Amino acid sequence: MKIKSVYSPSFRKYGQVLTGYDTAALLAALEEKTPRPADSVVYVPSEKALEDLPIFQEFTNGAYGGMPIQIGYCNGFNTKLNCLEYHRGSELNIATSDMILLVATISDVKNGKLNTKKVEAFRAPKGAVVQVFETTLHYAPCCDVRGNEIAEGFRVAIVLPRDTNTGKPDLSIRNTEDKLLWAKNKWLIAHADSAEAKQGAFVGLSGKNIDIAL
Image 1 (cartoon, one colour):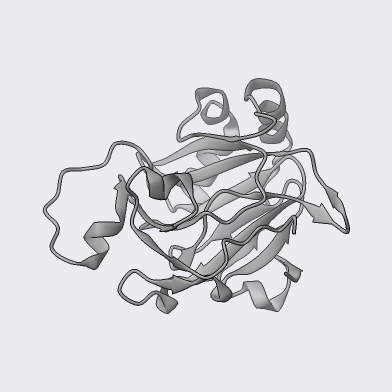
Image 2 (cartoon, one colour):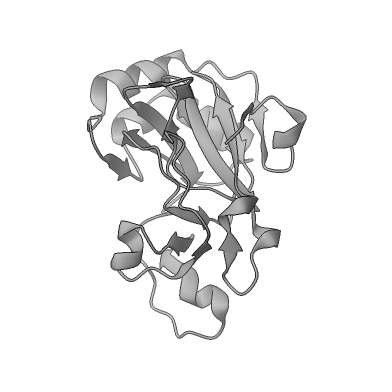
């Protein structure tokens, strides 16, 4: 599939790149203090080593207007779509190397269903503060792909409203969206081929399970 840039006009409906933040210390902490699996993906919602940095308060006061936030990480190796998720509140992604984001818009979801033909791919460069709007479907980043070369892996800082992606609240199913709730402030739509589907996630992605390595 065609991979565009997060700086392209095509990305404007999905998010934007925030400027004015010095991410050097954050990238260094990611490299030095967070593990990166070679053949899987690890996600930690909140990491003290990242939240102790000055940029934590800068994101709190600036990007989130004083709202409580968390900084965690998503590290590893991935080339597939597998699922799409969304949150109440935007998400920031800051990577130690170039990465690929697979995204779609929540307005294209009908009764929890979405065809993966609606998904687009965007390359985010190292160090950029990429804001993904709350109306944007997204999931784990993908390794960068250039020609036939696939990057070894990625380390990405993930900034979200506090307690997102922690324990799922108890609720009675009242509508289709309630069926998608997978964790706190995390609504998930899975592809049938994904591990999440086998774990009981709502299967709503039809079409090809996108693999950017193919």
